[in-house]
Amino acid sequence: MTDEERAPERIPGRTAAPAHADESTGAPLTGEDSTTPAFGDGTRAVRAGLPEPAKHEPTLPGPVFAAHFHLPGEPTGPYTYGRDENPTWTHLERAIGELESPADDSVETLVFASGMAAISAALFPQLRAGDAVVLPDDGYQALPLVREQLTAYGIEVRTAPTGGDAQLDVLDGARLLWLETPSNPGLDVCDIRRLADAAHARGALVAVDNTLATPLGQCPLDLGADFSVASGTKQLSGHGDLLLGYVACRDAELTAAVRRWRKIVGAIPGPMEAWLAHRSLATLQLRVDRQNANALALALALRDRADVTGLRYPGLPDDPSYKLATRQMRRFGCVVSFELPSRAGAERFLGALRLVDDATSFGGVRSTAERRGRWGGDAVPEGFIRFSAGAEDADDLVADVLRALDEARD
Ligand SMILES: *Cc1c(COP(=O)(O)O)cnc(C)c1O
Image 1: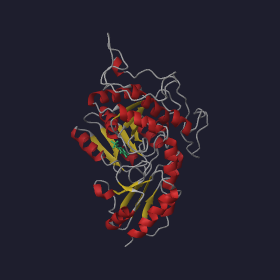
Image 2 (image 1 turned 60 degrees about the horizontal axis):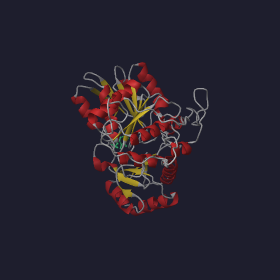
Image 3 (image 1 turned 45 degrees about the vertical axis):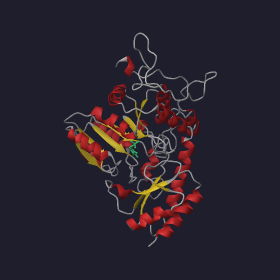
Image 4 (image 1 turned 135 degrees about the horizontal axis):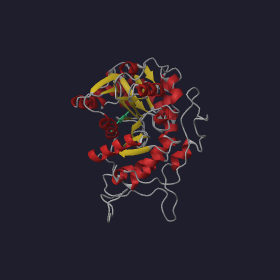
């Protein structure tokens, strides 16, 4: 590793606090294999990644706009050229790292221009022609494109659904297992710890797409994953105003490969986006708790309607994912999915909503919903709705949805 590939020195003042849940009760771990949380999630979110206070300096330093940095003499890091490192990324990377694995100082996080850039950086450097990789067949919409590209490089791509442990049947000889849990848009959940143990026993690496859960919902690295990868475009930043991605990783060699890939591909976030994302992290716990509570309120309100079928929300006690979700998650996300009887009915429903924008993506403070089948690609019925609960008042949101459903009825 050259100097410019090396991470900048850690900023002092990191406050460790584990956030992973007890597997059987969902309660924060207090056993001997964990450190007692020093602070709650809200406290950790507002302070995440902040540098030590310095007189006359702002709490969160502003974005650093620089293509290059003063560099007389020997070109030593950390800050040399803007594609390699940027101080605004450094603060954000530390913040995300603290949330992804609070008790572990050795976790390094690298930010990217988008979630797809982060996914590519975890995946592509690890795979060679002749390797096999296991991808979900019900995961993020762009994964089929990734699959095509990997196949073109001579990599064998096997797929398995997220739920039901089907990954175990296709793991032998695989180099990497990719999990997305809860899956998007189907909201199935898989057992990260169990699958990670099975993969490691066969010599395979494990990556988890943590986009939907956010690090306040689940900590894949603490459940045994080698990579926790996510789109920061969604609930992590939460305002629908930027694209971002990250890879968090504990192993130095794996991290170096991700860093090298970022340098080669150059899929780097702008300083303004990185700064905005860091600023938004301060409200992560507020947003996530409010939005997820709204998602649950909505799911409860939809449960008994005759015109709604296939309702899924991992936080709903009678959801097929609930039992597993409560073991490895501390929060269940802001996405609810359900089916309406027809495409036309689904379109009428979306058109009748007043407080919910018909838009793709999810995780923002303003509720959005879309008829997922309009994209093609996802194996979903024509009337399938993916609903992302925002931070509106629950009563207003639920009333708007129920009214729109009534108006949309045949
Ligand atoms: C949106 C999303 C991505 C891709 O993220 P971008 O920031 O849009 O590139 C990856 N995985 C999941 C689960 C997503 O929802």
